[in-house]
Amino acid sequence: MQTYKAPLNDMKFILRDFINSESNSLLKNSDIDLSDLEMILEEASKLCEEKLLPLNQSGDEEGCKYENGNVNTPKGFKEIYREFVDNGWQGLTVNKKYGGQELPYFMNMFLDEMISSSNMSFGLYPGLTSNAIDAIEKSASDEIKDLYLPKLASGEWSGTMNLTEPHCGTDLGLTKTIANPQNDGSYKLSGTKIFITCGEHDMSKNIIHLVLAKTPNCPKGIKGISLFVVPKIIPKKDGSLGERNNLECGSIEKKMGINASPTCVMHYNEATGWLVGDLHKGMKAMFIMMNGARLMVGVQGLGIAEIAYQSALNYAKERLQGRSLKGSKNLDKDADPILVHPEIRKSLLKIKTLTEGLRGLMLWTGLQVDIAKKEKDKFKKQNADDWVSLMTPILKSFATDVGCEASNLAVQIYGGHGYIKDHGIEQLVRDSRITPIYEGTNGIQALDLVGRKMPLHTGRLLKAFFHLVKEYIEKNSFNYNLKDFMPSLTKSFNRLQQVTAYIASTGLKDPDEASGPASDYLKMFALVATAYVWTRYAEIAFNKLNNDPNGFYLAKINSGKYFMTKILPETGSIMSSILSGAKTYNDFEDSHFDSAFKL
Image 1 (cartoon, rainbow, N blue to C red):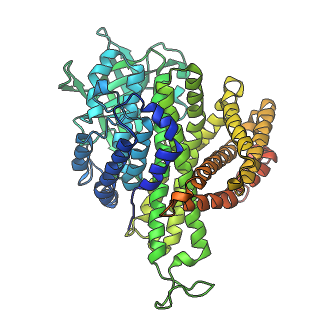
Image 2 (image 1 turned 45 degrees about the horizontal axis):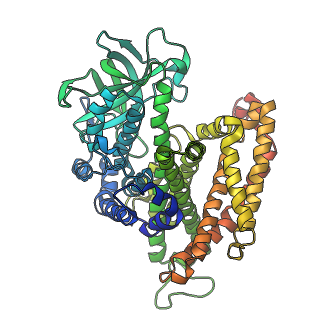
Image 3 (image 1 turned 45 degrees about the vertical axis):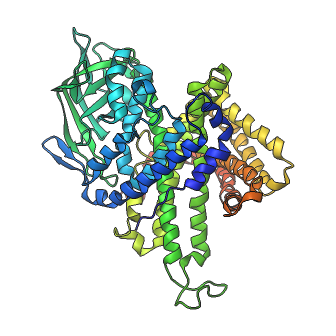
């Protein structure tokens, strides 16, 4: 069976020790403190463990049902959604002006991780709404904000994002959906959007679609795209519901995973919508939503990795198979638990150390979102913005790859029992597999890192990261406690700098030499950033060892040693691959791809 308990000890460690000083400054003028945040985490854990987890396998098995344009969610989903929104979880970070609680953004990351572990499909409903709230709050007129945000923050209404069309996904400049202006300031939208997560369902009273479309005679390509708010039911000025809009769900996809959330084909038939932001600036407004969604998807990868680890660990402790090669551990039983076997231990430690390291990197990035939002100092605000911009493609890509790898390792640990449905482990493989694909495939994230973030502001984003790590290494080079950490961090960091210089120089001569190794480079960057987090963890943990009755800090140090010695060395092979150049695949003849079977 799927096993999950929210990793509250680790979350509180990050909250108290890892981001403590900065989070205190964020809470300085607030009526809440760290103890309040910890209590919120505990309440969230109860919701996820007791209510969402029991619906995860049944929701996957039942799936969503489509009938005559309507979508019915699995049994129990409407009830838990109502409990979720009635208790204020939807508005956790929303401005109090619109009925939210205005808590730090990183608290929503904690919540999203717990939800993703316990029921990833359910998390898509409130997750997309949160991203819609963000886009509307930052881009829409006051009139639209005042009408829509209170209803979205309360969860009475939910939100979606509509980008993809049958003929275009990443290349949104090919969008064909048209928005014709009306005399009253509204627009009539016509077109078809596909892969629309939660585009139609029965849990909220209204669904608010944010739709990309072009207006007549607009500039070509993405420069002509605008963003529109298109409600399922057109609200009146007082927020009450009026007439049904001219849009419909044509069908829902039959998918590999996340079956308890509907992936919809949406038809807009002269549907009424209103412009969000400026005309022909839709991509700028939509990227607010997309970047938030990319971080959310990274958190989904983290959440899947956590439940995969806990389930596999529980199984490894209970499953009796074979004997330890160093002598039996259970003389009173016919076999030892598979946890005694080195291969199982390595697999579990790989998931554990990647997950815990990524949690810190993810939450540190969430902290920077908060700093960028509230900081008055322009330089500090810029630094925080730069960090988020740099880390968004890295976290979206690497964390989702880790989620996929973790779920596959969990199936391997379960063996045949992992392959059948009863234990729910194969569901984790199916659910996680979408995360490297939606909200921009991981290949696109890598191209964003190399093609946009690397040269942006003459390399300012990368320079800031390099300066941070370099300064930390110099400061702690002679820290005896970190003798098992600093050499590995230093070596991998030097490799990253060398590879960065290589890609930057070769890419000027041949763009394919920069784009070719982009995914490898992103992984290398992520490993080094995670190693930096683990070294900081260790520094904190060594200072806490005198007060460690349950061995948490000692476990943290030993986990970090595993990451630094067994996972981080992969940066060496990645460097060798990148420095060998891209010619072996870029210059490979097209006709040679099918040479083995073409007569």
